[in-house]
Figure 1 (cartoon, rainbow, N blue to C red):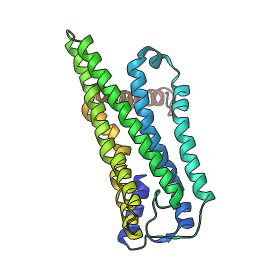
Figure 2: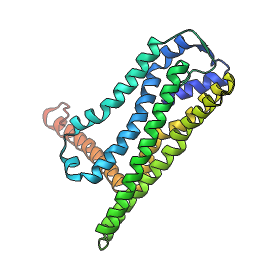
Figure 3: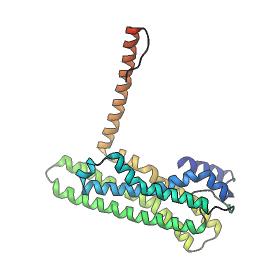
Length: 255
């Protein structure tokens, strides 16, 4: 998504952003797919966190592969539907800016925006419920366990920050675009908002990892442990290669 936005930004600054809708869609249909999929993934993350709090035992014992497929399938269908509808309704109208919002015809664009706003509202509700449940559960269950209280407190703050960034970026971004559409601003103004709102919306797609790395001690510890394991594996491969070379006069790598 970021690569496509950088490419779009270069075209805008070089005053070469205008093109026919048909050409635009053929260039950025993967961007449209990933953008639509990203909206669902934020909701899926909210669902996953709520399930993890309400049904922790079931959540831990479910098959990761099956669970990932089931929770990702609605987003894949939604993203695929947007791309297919985009190609079915394609025309050669001249666009001032080529991005996942403007590439859709006006009727489909309005529906897409309201769907995203609906997804955003549900996501905010789920994050809020998870935060409240986690905070109340922590307060009642871990009064005498400082370590567990600290861990759950970190989780609650991370969820709150994720929800805050989601509200600031995706929800407000699409809400502004809908208001611009409702109040019937000029075509140039609407196209400008469509282009500018894409930048804060990208925050949602990248902030989750950095927020977790910043706030969650366990996440950082697991990440560092993976790096250490990888380094140890590489060292082991190097040592095995040297021993093999000494013994057989040739190089082998044992994994």
